Length: 108
Length: 113
Image 1 (cartoon, one colour):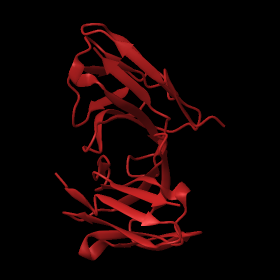
Image 2 (tube, rainbow over the protein chains, first blue to last red; image 1 turned 30 degrees about the vertical axis):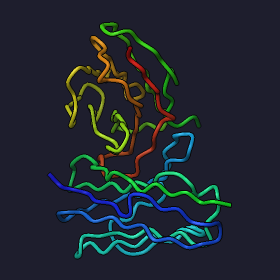
Image 3 (cartoon, one colour; image 1 turned 135 degrees about the vertical axis):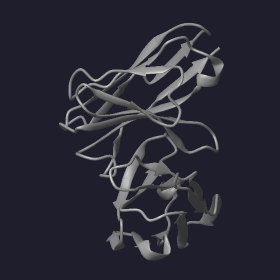
């Protein structure tokens, strides 16, 4: 089945810094989503982005489907951005496959 | 609009006990699924359903049972709990196919002693 790799596994930054999280996938996909799991465990959908670029406030995401990767950008990080970020992909009507996540820690 | 509601939030079981984790959604979503999350392993799919009366196995179905008698509810049953089932369980739903935007419940933290 399709493999999803996220990097880096851990990232520690100071408040105000910018960050880039990467998601590589092993085969073509027609669905890609980014999620944030906050320190209390809640999973929130950030972007549905099978291709192209989207922005939502300080967060933006870009998926280059032909090269099989997606990037999540966080600008001017805040402590509330801490948590684990997951990328998940699917092919056709197939089930979502999750990466193992990037743990982001933003220190004040 | 409550979204996806999971109960209970926490549960402790003894080995061999059975229990049901409840999941309900009020968004009229066709697709519902159960995941387990273990440290360092991301989320793994246990079972899923594409509509009432239809269920199928995911990546790690052994030891779990599901049913989908209504669009709203998708309970997960542990038949005979084992310590290996200690995990955090998430229910999710989406409109239409599984690749659409997924909405997650708050999770159930289960410990099996």
